Length: 216
Image 1 (cartoon, one colour):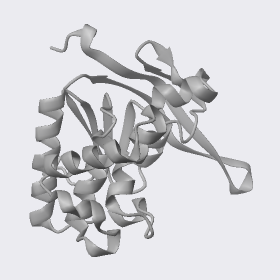
Image 2 (cartoon, rainbow, N blue to C red):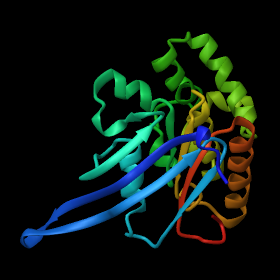
Image 3 (cartoon, one colour):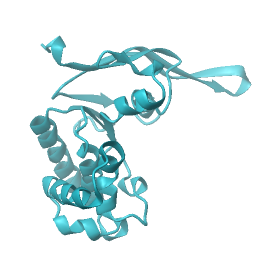
Image 4 (tube, helix red, strand yellow):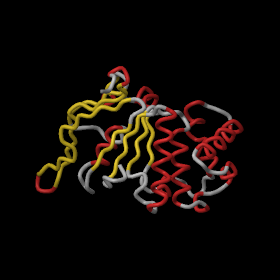
C-alpha cells in the first residue's frame, strides 16, 4: 500500500481530443486517472500510437487536456500560467527517446548541464561547471566530458548526459519517454540500472514510458 502523504502528482479523468478530417474527433487519451508517489516508479506501457507520449505532454504542460485535472503538490497545473507555472514545472523534468535531438550541436556538454541551474537559481558559470563535473561523475561519465560536443559522444553517453541534466535541479518527478528505445540492448540495461539507482537514492518519482514489457 502507498502512503497518501507521499502522493506527488495525480491525474484525474484526463482526456485529450483532437479535431480530425471530416468533422470527426480523435481521442488520444481517454479518462486517465493515475497517481505518482515519491520514490516510486510508474510504468506506462502500450504500443506505438496509443497515446503514451500525448499523456506525457499533458503532464509537463506542453499541451492541455480537453477534460480533467492534473494536480501537482496540491495545485491544478491546468489552471496555472506564467511564472507560477514555470516555477512548478522546474520540479518535473524529462528524458527523451532520442538523446541527440535534445542537444544543440553548438553547445558543449558542460554548458548544457549548467543551463537549468543558471536559469532557475542564477548560479555563476564557474560554479555551474563545478556542478556539471559532479553530475557527470554521478551518471558514470568522466568529468572532462564538460568540454566535449554532442557529436563526440555515443548514444549511451549522450543519454547519461541527458539524465544528468534532468536531475541537475533536483526534480521531484522524472519522466522518461522511451528513454532507452534508441539504444542497443546492452546499453539499455545500463541506463535502466542507472535510473533505478537515481530514483532510489534521490527519492524521485518516475514515470517510465515504453512498449517493451520486459524492460519496464
